[in-house]
Image 1: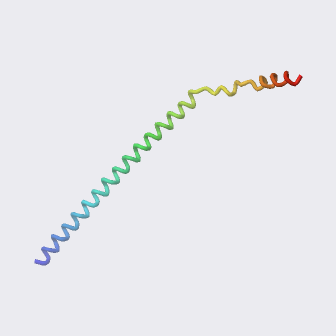
Image 2 (image 1 turned 90 degrees about the horizontal axis):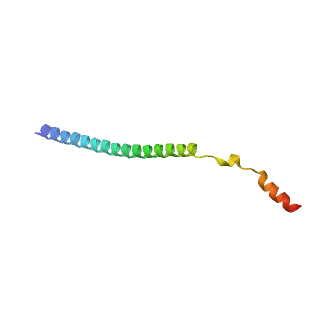
Image 3 (image 1 turned 45 degrees about the vertical axis):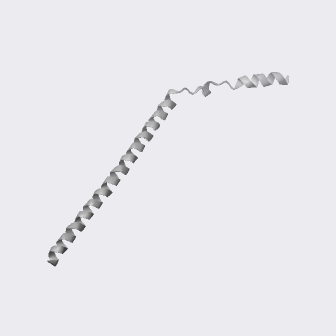
Length: 77
């Protein structure tokens, strides 16, 4: 009779371990899904920023530095 009880208790313990592993795997899947979503959003934001930087013009190269020099030179005379 004792061995039958031991078998039942061992089966119960094994069943508990399986359920605990299933819960751990479910939690891992949820965390991985959340991290994947955050990664996708960050990648899309990075791509959008890169496209924005490539599309916008950089007009600072065409700026004439001599313009202000001429104005200030006229005042000194």
